[in-house]
Length: 136
Length: 256
Image 1 (cartoon, rainbow over the protein chains, first blue to last red):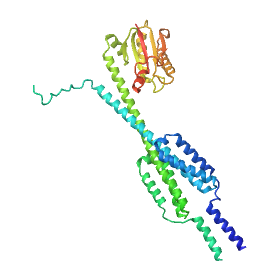
Image 2: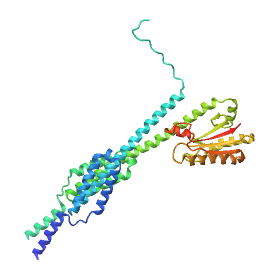
Image 3: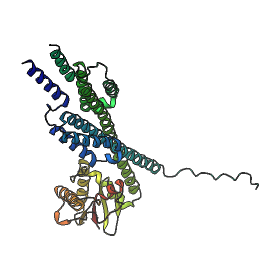
Image 4: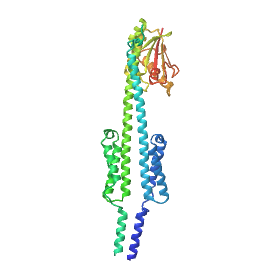
């Protein structure tokens, strides 16, 4: 009786350590794949390269863990890959918005300068200074 | 008995992991979330992203207090920190987008005042007949071989639409008054658009809007000829916003 109990307990330890008790993280893996794909299709490959590479590495590790039946590890890695990919996408989008805003600022400034010079048609003629050091 | 206790202890240890109350990963995540949540831009533009970060940090804190293993505390802290960084990036993005909106309004205002200045300059340059004609309306006018051309510019139509604005309708009623006072003159309505998509349809609808308004204010439809040219006859460069705005117009010619 006591032997059986001890055996059960050992089995419990093994299960707790291996994480085999956790269900397969299909949903988390799916979310990670989607998030990484979305980031890859955005401007992130150019504008948030490190963040995206982080996400891709984590997703690959999650897939590998999943194939080895390490479900707990696969779930954690998949969840981390998801936020890494979301960060890559957010940073790339922020960078694009900032570039567009800068472009817009430049064009409005140029337009404003044009309007100002158009309103003042004839600027004062600038007198040409006499050359220095030349005697008449 | 001793063996049994040892086994139970091993189970507890395996389930709990090393239940440290101090986790560097948690401390770092907490510092990042705190720093991000004080930023006004984040509070204004990324409320829901910030809430996700705070929730994730809370989950990490609970896991730590409950003595869960270091790996899961570290994991939840990692998520919290990334969520905070996402909130920061989203706030920056929305701030830029708001700036773009404000700048677009500013640009439209400048373009409109430029158009007005051009029109004022042109009406000053008119001869006596044209000036008398132009006085009836506030529209820029020009003498051509056909007669006097009055131009209804883009801003007299609804933005990106085809209906006349109230000011536009008022100008058209004055043309109609002039036309009724001079019943033997033919009126040409000619619509133009920029080189964008659906330019022909756009110019057709605006031409129809002006023709219908003239008819509504008592001009005999038999004296009217309406033609839409789409982008065929630009009067400015289609590469700039200002040029495209100048190209979107309806010319009304009073034939002499």
